[in-house]
Image (cartoon, rainbow, N blue to C red; front, side, top):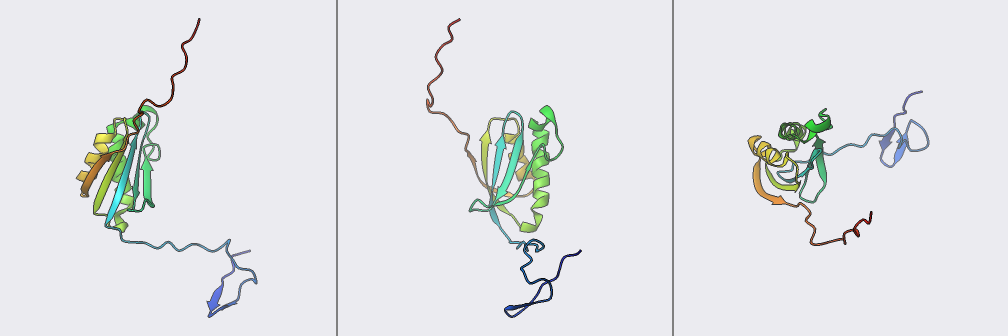
Amino acid sequence: MGKRRVVTIGNKEKGGSKSSSKAGATKKIKRRNISKGQIHIKSTYNNTIVTITDLNGGVIAWSSAGLLGFKGAKKATPYAATSIVGSLLEKTKKVGLKDVEVFVKGIGSGRESAVRAIAANGLNIASITDTTPIPHNGCRPPKPRRV
C-alpha cells in the first residue's frame, strides 16, 4: 500500500502502525555553515580524486574524474582535475566554505591544476601540504631470479 504517517504528540504516537516506521522514515540532514575546511587531492597516474572535509575530517563532498564521465587516460589529465574542482565547489556552495587547507597526495599530473583551480574559484588557501607517502627503505626486495 502506501507509507503510514506517524504523528507524535508528546510521548504518544497517533495513527499509522503500532510498530515504529524506521524503514519509511527519512533522515533529516542538518545543513551547517562551515567557513574553514580541508581539501584532500589524491592524484595518481590513472585518476584524480578530490574530497572536501571539515576540520575534524568529516566528509562534506567528494568527486573524481570517473564520476564526471572521463574515461581511460583522460581521467588523469590536468583538464579533468580542474573540472573536478569546479563541480565539487558547485556542490558545496550552500556550506559557505571560505578558507581551506589543501593536502596533496600522489604523483599524477592533476596535482598542480587542481590547486590552481581551487585558488581560481575564490577560496583562500591557508596552507598546501604534500602528504605523498615516501618509503624509508621499507620492505626487503625479492631475491634475484635464477634462469
